[in-house]
Length: 174
Image 1 (cartoon, rainbow, N blue to C red):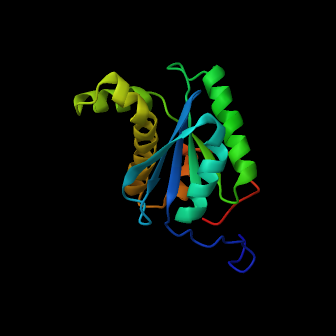
Image 2 (cartoon, one colour; image 1 turned 120 degrees about the vertical axis):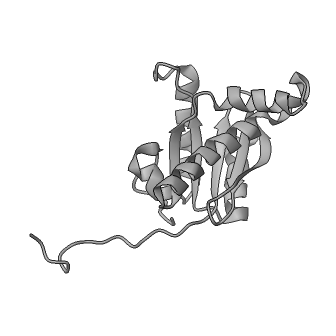
């Protein structure tokens, strides 16, 4: 048995703002949470050309401690073209950012976000402009709810199996 002096103990992580991204082929929805990691809110929808630089600016502006990127797996859990595109986008973000970037299974978030928007009175045209934000918000709120249920912070939930860290050696301000 090793003594407490010989064990490496990492410092506890603090809570903070997380940014979630729902990358699409045309638009990228962005959401963020409060510093207490309780409530996710929509932030904006970015065009394809600003998907990395726009998230980079939001992370800096909000002093975010991490980014979650939705990974659109098929219902069977397989990765198709959209998942490969999201994975590549997450790698681009991880290169641009100094905070951890995680991929999180986002199956059905866009579908449920679209249904909620229609139920709230949006027609398909108006919903199209905000559905990516709503999907990013749903993705982030799922992580926040898992955090609350486990009584730890988001980084610990994500590292505990809910997410796949894209930049394992970089960006650890959390």
